[in-house]
Image (cartoon, rainbow, N blue to C red; front, side, top):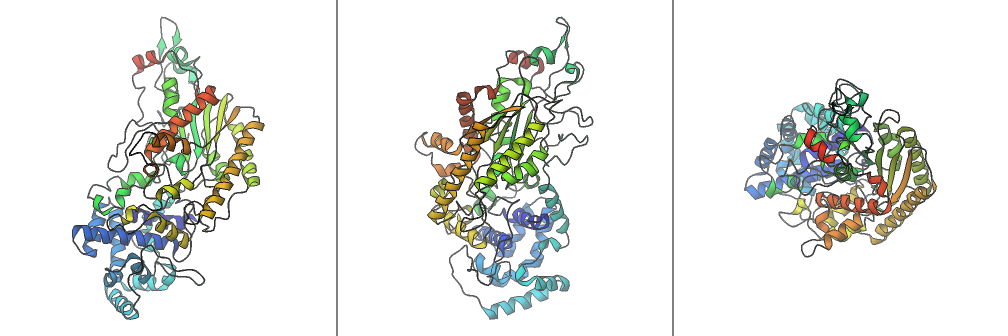
Length: 581
């Protein structure tokens, strides 16, 4: 899928918090595809907001736009100028009907009609003609002509004045895998978002490319902190640098995760789709969320470093991670983390994109504990019948290619943990009969309905598991199990020069069991992100970190590194070691 098309879809997410996750991997679909989904989400939220606040559809839309930070609010008002005149005659119809009337949803030849809501009114040719006359009177002539020209292909919102630049910005951000704001080009940044220190340790000097987290210290950091762990200077009585004295024999190592949207911790706040939760302050951090690609790596199970959320209105829960455990054992590892998670990544992306984004030098940098974590995209796609999955042969070839590349990059003494795929049948089992946030006010949209709608449009993030057909779900799990078997076999049989290798069974099932065993009120659905119904939530990822650490303590204890006996001295001398922000 082209970046141009991605930008248009992502722009719809901005206005509707679109109900789907794999933004980097969604195909065009059929019957309007992502345009239809975006329209349905926008109209649904706006109708419910109008009903909840007892106002008109138009008033509700303007209120919603006013809540967005600029320039998104400006773009929203432009969108309203184009579409509100078309929508007004149908404002009391269902979102399906409205989006069909304005030609964002339609039915292609040979395809079934796609509906998110129960059918409650019929199309009217007379009403359609009246609406077109009304729109013609209200719209600038050229815009109306353009809308007419697009017809059933959907109106291209990125062609609108004031919106084109926003689309280009979104396209640029989502197309990058390295820090965008990186003065010295060392792949580390002093800015949090835009693939900055939310994703990799903060650069302590963005004007010198030789200063960055994870490197071996330059002259033992006698004068400057070249590796950004907050430790530098000289112990005069012992005639040794503090870096050498406190870290030299402690075997420091970094924590790196290569993976998918679970690695990156994808989340669309359900508050953005729930009419009763939408307030003038709820979207204040929308730009921050957008420039982090709807991902929250700073709170993830692999590289989370926050102690608590800075955005409690839209994300909350305990933060635990592999990185936190590694640093707790050895404070010399401070800031040495990289989260190279990519929404939609699979085993093909792993070598062609993710490894290329990795920042490590096998001569100048310290060893790492690296996770190869692809939970399900090799079996997930938009095929409603569950086909087009990665084969066993492809998985083996891709994984071996990735490991060979890593052997040329990682410093000697590193460790690589390959994590198996999940059994995603738990998603449907836990969610299918529950109400989705988009239907919360009227209790009229279940997850099963949403899954069918996405599959009808052929844009589901994982049609194999988010499917009302049990046979398709079972077949998807069967292939996932086979692909996990490939990774397990590779871990047993392959040897590499610069790292040792281990296979770890996927953590989701054990995390769910821990949660369920906590007793009443701890149900599986509570561990799944409400908007997409697909990703593990904050609680689940914190539990996943616990599961992974315990597994490594049993199966590969050396992966975690030694406990540094000088930790107390480091705290006393260097405090929070410069922190994270």
